[in-house]
Image: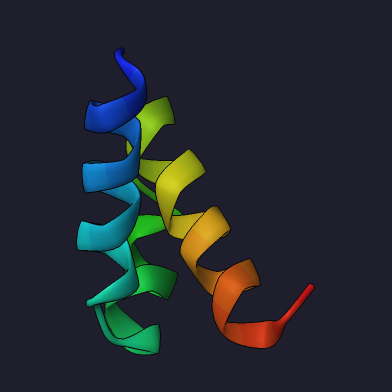
Length: 46
């Protein structure tokens, strides 16, 4: 994944609701779980 793709994907996940991000944490796809967790951390400031 290129740097610009990573940034775009991260921004996409930041637009999702907390409820949606929590559901995505149980995804079978590692990349989806990774970005969901990162977005939740961004929201919580940790």
